[in-house]
Image (cartoon, rainbow, N blue to C red; front, side, top):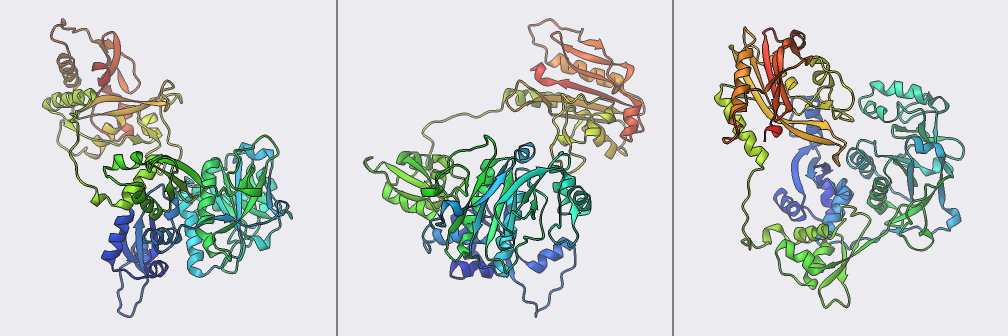
Amino acid sequence: MPTVSVGRDRLFQALGRSYTQEEFEELCFEFGIELDDVTTEKEIIRKEKHLEAEVREEDEEEVIYKIEVAANRYDLLCLEGIARALRIFIGKEEIPIYKFREIPRESMLQINVTKATSKIRPYVVGAVLRGVSFNRANYNSFIDLQDKLHQNICRKRTLVAIGTHDLDTIDAPFSYEALIPQDITFTPLKQVKSFRADELLEFYRSDLKLKKFLHIIENSPVYPVIYDRNRTVLSLPPIINGAHSAISLRTKNVFIECTATDLTKAKIVLNTMVTMFSEYCDSKFEVEPVEVVYPDDRQFEDCASEGIFKGKNIYPDLAVTVMDIPLSVITCPIGISLGVAEVIPLLNKMQLHAKEKLGTGNYAITVHVPPTRSDILHPCDVMEDVAIAYGYDKIPKTKPKCMTTGGQQPLNVFSDKIRGEVSRAGYMEVLTWLLCSHEENFAMVKRKDDGAKAVTIGNPRSSEFEVVRTSLMPGLLKTLKHNIDHRRPIKIFEAGDIVCLDGTRDVGASNNRRLAALYCNVTSGFEEILGLVMRIMQVVQKPHEPANDNFIRPSNEPEFFPNRQCYIIFKEKQIGAFGVVHPEVLEKFGIPDPCTFVEIDIQALL
């Protein structure tokens, strides 16, 4: 859940009154958000730098409210959005109507797109805010909203990257191109030196903030770039804007462009930016549209706006979505009995224009969803807003009209029974990470990666979490390494899932429940693991079937010592393997004593 930091005094000023902390927490609870923390800007800096607090009575620090909002409420990621939503909720403001600035079609700014952009970031959208009045507070909020969106819906700029520019410093029409790095030269934001694009990426490898975005384009043969009519570089998305068009407190006209690999998310991001900060324009809540011109067949759905702005590739799309919803669809799931006249004010409190649908005999509502509410996708979302506005604490408690009995899945019941058998054999259960490094999953256990088995994390936060494990062995060996000082023998086991690529599944991968056990002593303990395998095969045997003692076959797995390993066979199918762990594997994990390991597919046993 995102947390938005806002100045308390500025927020109360925007709300038109002051609140005690308890009163504001109650308001947040009623609206469906949460006051997560109360701090100060200096305290935040002290915590980040791990400094000792220095409290002086003469210090007057601004109080910061950290407010936790829903992950899909992009309109609440800044003070402007929170304040506007709360004002509407408490009845101090009407729902705003967002509109286009009236200009002739031929005067509309254009972004011309070249074919090469389809190789890297195929989409671009844009808009203009005219007559913006910036001060230090709302300027910082404008920048913070971009950062919040980049971290949230933009998925760290991989899906969408936002660029904001001082329109008075550049000339339209603009062009969105994709060129080889050596052909792009400009001065980036907060720099005075001009860089070639490939040199710029090398320059930012040591930058703590920007280095995490370099991977998005660095391996591409072409880089995306936006020029104005004079070939002045506006931005090198998704890395950095140009210094020439940088916005400042003196900026009056802001050009916003969003390049993307996902057009739907780009439209949501652009809508969020312009609807939140158009309140600072001379004409409040008015936005100037921009036309995107493509050279090929990349023409998309019609803009649902009205008049001359209804057409292809006109942005932003400030269309209002209309939904006709039966009253029962709203009230029945909540468990309340309300009429249309009672539901409509609740929807209006949540920024949803609502009115009774004519000709339905007071049994349906027409809801107009504004461009700020991209989270409203289904009547269920409207129902949730009614429940919030009504108050979850006011919904009467009722007993279910029908009774159901819940229970565990058969696989989980079976897993628990297997755990019990293994623990009674003297083994201690451990839990290890589902993710591991690529080296641990393959090279350290002498396995080769053929690219067809392991699920790889696209942008891992750490080198320790690069792939989803395809075996329980690395986790148990790491656990043993960190507990190597325990008295011998060390007997540990784990029952958990592995994940492998699977083209037959709609998600491209499948889970598999495994049991693994590790025995470590001054001797290998092969007979200990063999005894455990025999016990497991004995307890899963059906009573009416004859005992099958022939469940072992010779194996040749690289992680085990040659001629000291076996496959486990069940109903003529290989379901696992056990053996003495290879000395090279033990050496890589830093384990000095011999070990024996077994891993069994217990789903196959079930």
